[in-house]
Image (cartoon, rainbow, N blue to C red; front, side):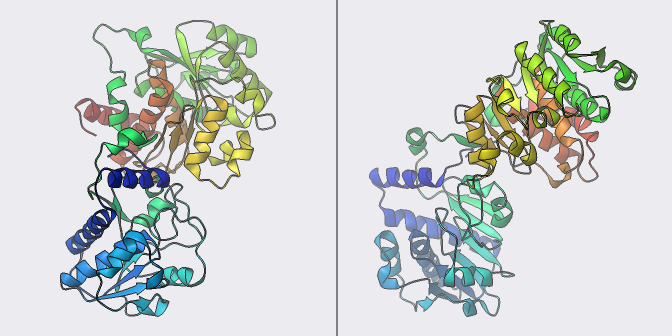
Length: 488
């Protein structure tokens, strides 16, 4: 169940299922029953208010209220709008409800009942206002069970349309949507249950979803495990550009590349900084590059097949020239941090040189510097990352607690295993180095980015509280051992 369906794709899944002979009311009955099962598994019967909206989400609510009442729960049902205005499957579901229908109003939530939020689903197109907004605001502090998504949350972007409640439990159907994983949606959904309501998996063949949840199942088969007959050069020779001042960043990246399996890692740095880098890990090769010409000469070695530029490199003309040299040498490139910011005044000077063997790893601020027009679009993180990858022809890894990796061909993943402990200086440098190490071993850029992000989160989780960036590379072997054994 790794596919993430957009709102439009979920509508199509419903339509294909109904076209295949499953009536809409049957799907709605199954959806309501799934919510009731989830509720009864977690709470004992107590006063409950089911808030129904004017569409199919509200129809689910009518089913839920009826089934809860039949199970012995004290239930009140409130409708936003008129019962006579209900149409289609929602009207059918409402016709089976024989109890009173009250007008949705905040006062119904007095006394702290369990709240079933069946007001609006994932396809809400405008911010909540009026009574809908007042009712949602009144859910604050209550125990809320959301049907599909918390009302006010957009299923595609995870963005809040004006206001949305904090749910303790969200029950969605068939497959999750991107908004269940993208922030702030992920935080608002609480526990997410994906219920089977009778939609066959075969509908996915027609939909061909392009968005997936990141995980080993996506890239395990192409992971570059060492071969018995391999040697160090067969595992790639990665180059990390080291800066003169912030030397820790490049050293973290280099260690990440080594732990990810690169056969050799060279740190290329100014001559005065050689002693600093040489005093670090004895596994590293240190090369002094006094200027751009020296860096080009270093990259002329065909065995050096991948380069990382940016962490601690410094912002300015020197970094720009080094990036241009690496791209011109035809190396697979990971570009992060200062390598991106150095092109802020002329993003096209970078973007026009990129190709599918390049990986950009910006955080939101760096993304805005090189894709300023895309960054201001109110379309959500997933859509922005996709648009950026399509524009530049490279893989874009847009970092955060909900990291998105997007390929130029439209494929994208949302990562969901990153713990809060990763919010520490240098963790992004390690991530870039891990991606570099995988790319150097021959893993394609998109899969390497996805694998690096997941391994990064898994390593942080394995280490736990107190994590600092230096801990990440050394936590990686344990994660890789479990991955190789077939575990997640």
